[in-house]
Image 1 (cartoon, one colour):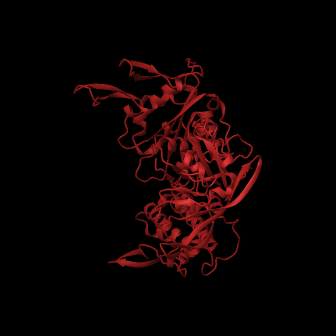
Image 2 (cartoon, helix red, strand yellow):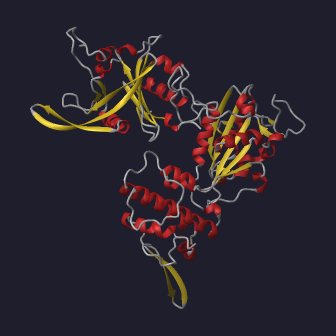
Image 3 (tube, chains in turn cyan, brown):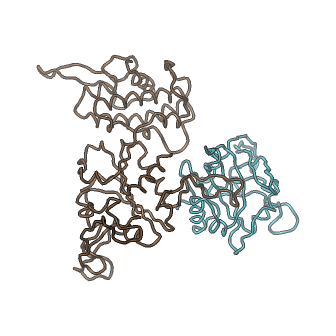
Amino acid sequence: MADDGLNVVRVLFQNIEEGDRLKFVARSNISDTGGGARDLRFRPETEFLPFFKKMFSGRRIQRRKSNGVSSEIEVLTDKVVWNEGGKEVSATMEIWPSTNARPNECRIARISSFGLDGLIQNDPKGGKSVFMMFQQQDGTIRVHFTTETSLKVDNWDPTIKKFATDWLSEGTKAAFLDLKSKERYPHV
Amino acid sequence: MSEADEILKLLEERRNVLLSGPPGTGKSRLLTEIAHLFENKGSGSTPRYKPESNVPIPPALTSSLPGDIGKATNRRVFQCVLHQSSKYRDFLTGVMPDVREGKAPGTFRITEGILYRASEYAKQPDNAALLIIDEINRGPTVQVFGGAIVAMEADKRLGGDGSRTSTTQFFDLLNPGDGELVEYAFPSRLYILAAMNQADVSVEPLDVAFLRRWAPFNLEPSTKVLREYFGLSARSSDELPATPASKNDVFEATVRAFDAVNRRIALGRGPEFQIGHGVLMRTGDLPSSTDDALDHVTTCWRLIKNHIDEAFFGDVRGTAIVLNADRGIDGNPYSLEETSFGDAPRAQINGPTTVAREQLYGLLKALAETGE
């Protein structure tokens, strides 16, 4: 009998633009001084944070100071798994809520710390590079890199392919599909 | 073999399948699943991670489509719902005013109904069409099919290569191409799957001659499905606790109550009036706490109670028996009262219009009692 734990229950896509590639190595977009943005951002937070809350099972409270005011925020945590050279690698990923400076954007924190930059796929036909996360029914969260052409042409599951094709034609930066609750973004 | 696979096999053998069952037994889910399998060459509707594959989530083949369905290169699903205004011209062909843009007033056109379009698609080489008709007993079914009724059965169709066989049955049809009446027959690779709820009190029973042309597939309420859904083990002989200590206590009481209520409905009104397990299932995650579970089942109970009231409309004693209101069970918010209207004896059920969450567990325990 098939192992239902391998069934996919949630899928997330994000278009990796040139500026985003630098986040994977924590380089500045405007200078070569090092540092710079290192978080993958998702907006609107009102759509993506509830989705991440279903995907990530861990919670921790973090103190944060903004404009001299200290507050507590809830950080979502969970182990994510990816394939690197035929081996499974895992690390703990964190989802942080929006800041005052960037309202309505939640983010995968410190994406640069995962060393994923070498896995980003270039589209052979000049299409989009795509960061993908999906969750299995047994809770496992996997990270995968693919391309617009692959999602449209390769032998993907028809549900995933249709969702990806709809998202790519809609043109939003990121998208998610919850196969359990049937929630999706964008709402096409 | 899954229900979807059984139905696909039946479609291949008989071409026309009629799915029936009480509300909430999964008819709509099955129609969706079969449509998905048919159009996606047997790939299930649940994507799966496959570690050794080129892409991580390839099509998950859950079904090997049988016979001609599996052989067709191109396949398409046509879907419709029958209703009281459905007409022959909506299904096959007919004359109707042409109000499309650019057409002169008073112009008429010949329609291409959904059965005609599915049939024409299936007539193309290497094509197969599945027509899904939901709520088939909600409209003037026999009129809608008209003369086509004689040509539906598998052995009355054209041969696999589109040629006439010794048993092919033709009927007259207004040809959309030239407006002439032509002899028409259905192709071999046209499959028709219909669904209905037999217990719908607002519809007429279907014509026997019509029903004879369909292979029946009946669905029943299933406590096994509910137990799997709620993550409960097989029923034990343990007594239900006086108060629920966990969400599983609520689920166990719910499943036992559901089973007992259905058994009484089947005895009092007939098995087709039972209520399906789907009424207790919801989209999304399971309730996560005892209170969530009570809230969920309280909402579901409103639907179940409405169904009981509808099925036993005008039969107070029947309703009371289903609710175990005639047995004076502690905790049951419903009770049967013998009273009178003038000199005439009367019975009435006392109880809340809407059961509160606090009353629910007592009700479930009372409903679950079978007196055995």
